[in-house]
Length: 335
Image (cartoon, rainbow, N blue to C red):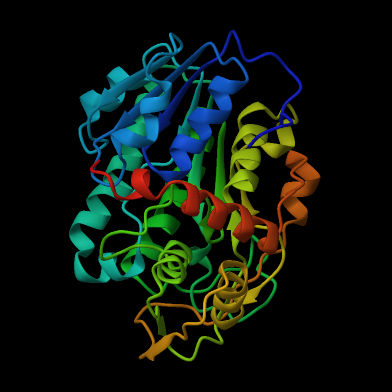
């Protein structure tokens, strides 16, 4: 992966902090930055969602270091931001259902932890703060495609927390003169995404099902659509946001997707065909807090960040399926 760089400047004099760096997206960011010679790549992770196995390949790299700690502790955030140029903030408690079951913890991590990180970045004079926002912010808006400045009301506690992140980022940028960029992710998938646990995302669950020959469960009729986005595109967006020089591109929020939408039924059928499986899904009731359809307008990210997603849904699914086939032992080993 990452045969071509998404940047055209040297990274050797830059130090990066990736919160949630032992997670799925975070570890892909680590991989990219180390491959292209970043001066320092520090990970802050409490390993609640992340896995040591995701970053074990990097431990011998002298530019890499790991801080085991929690963003809910402001002193930990302060220490992690020491000597850092760019923060890529991925740490969060994801999952709409988890937020409905436990809104307090979701709030404490996603809002309290986020403010801690903003404060630490301000105090330690971090040059740029890029954070994972979410397409869930569009809430009950029916408009398609989704355009950044037209949102609805949130449909879950998780969505509330991610919208609050955007509001705090805007205030910190204006009040303290910080450079902050939010990336509204649309259903990111790819290698190292965990298929285990109660809150696993749909694509690793489907892949696990077709490889095991077990029928997956689809919530609702399967007609709901998403702008599924391969993780390499997400990494591109983070790198471009971290390094963009155009002042107009800073203190903005961007949709990060590919601009296609795929139904869950179509998604399953693609994976089933690619894997040569014969199983059929089981259908259950709609899931609380879910939106029906999602499709991103990515013209703003293209224009201001130079974002040009290279991997579309079918290629992304093929590459992810292949990775899962070849890494079964890795997937099911302990953290």
